[in-house]
Length: 193
Image (tube, rainbow, N blue to C red; front, side, top):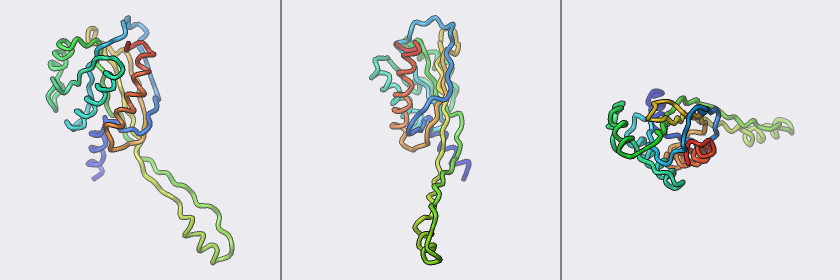
């Protein structure tokens, strides 16, 4: 059961599933000469074809809305394969200058307990207060994603970030939030135009 739950979360990755995304670490290759890219291939690493398609389509749409050409990788790379040849062909045929890859790095289960307040008034006051002040206990998942950008000409990593957010099953919304967090950062860092 636990393995099935983790698979569902990992498949859901990409899909990040983060209701509010924060960048926790980042790196940019200071030697990358650029210029900022205007054409991107989007890759979502997931065991679920459906989740991968939703992630890649949604992130590609967000890039296009920001004025960047984008192609989802699933159109050329068969499910369940590393697809290096297909990816190379897609990069070449699309004219992509960079490849953006997102994968789940880890999922941590957390528990939040809201404590109850003090109870007064002898036994009967305490008894009523005990029912009214039962602590609120919630379990949730913190999803850590790694998003990296590669230069297909040199085959080198040029930019990477890790992000964290609260897990959710609404993959389109989570992917949109991830994209809306990362695309401005990619532009500010000179990776995208």
